[in-house]
Image 1: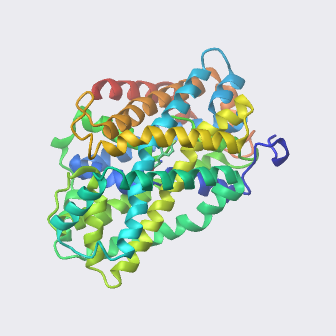
Image 2: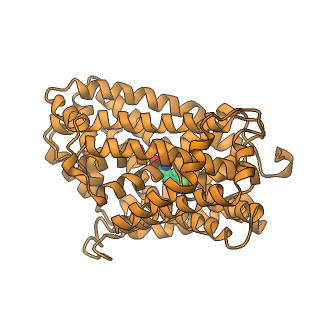
Image 3: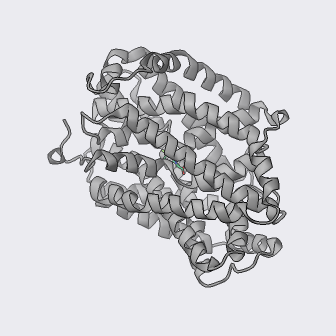
Length: 446
Ligand code: PFF
């Protein structure tokens, strides 16, 4: 059993684990990406497809990852090597690559959130004029070096938390701040829903228009489910590896999935009604949160306070996710290469920072340079989220369903200590539904 004494570190408690895994799951994916994806893909129709995927494939993959992590007490590459070996550790390497790619652009967007903490505190965002807010965001995100500075600052914070280690860094940050984020989000939803004209947005969000369903949209929903739940690259394998043997894995899986989904759903209730109330375009893409939310704040009493608080919390939500992305890379160097945590965090963080620079420039100086029709940031997002994560999901479910099933079932029930009534359904999803559906959706979306 992994103990603090073996040098890998451990969670302080089960609540700590659930919160840390939720911290990984809840991030920019929920608050920045989900609302704009729903906006671009026809609102409720996207929501329904998304929920269907989360509660069948998503939740099953998460349990697989926790099982692999705890059964092996290793980070992804070592986990596959220990449980089976052969070519399986390649899956772990793909995860490390995905972590690196996703974190590079993630940190750029998180840097925008950091910048908006200062901009809102300085009162620069106090207008509900959509055009002005749009210009402000455009000028900022296309600036040659200002966003890179914030990207650097965010990366530095991420490295610092990872160096501080499992229990004292990650767990502590999540415990206090996630519940606070949730409360703020609920308050914002109330404000947004009571704006004049908000009901149009609510309709868009909750009445499905199934003509919007397409292969691309289903692929988008699948990618988003993996991204939002932090699946397919071994983040949850890594987190599961630090969990004590007797804890109830299936319950933890359910709690993390529910919490993550609730936050995304509420973020939609904040953003989309406001988008309609202020006549923004719901398919405005990545800038949506940074343009619409300031308009909502400007219409609230004590809006500045809410604005600062919100962007602080968004930064923190992004931080607890970024930490898990970096942790996948770092734990590989620590577990497999025997490197020191501090050194590997600094090196991996530095390289990721460099890879993020073209993503940042792709909104400004390099706007016209596209690869396969995508700017660099979208390309990184596409390769990471739409390709690598679903591929990782196929590998993980096949591994659990066909390669280590008896061991996996033992682990899922904590050696019989916690009954798992849906075990047969889970096995069926792992063996058949998930690999086939993910493969089919992947091919359809290409
Ligand atoms: N789940 C995070 C979010 O929704 O923002 C992003 C993420 C973290 C994706 C960790 C993947 C991952 F392994």
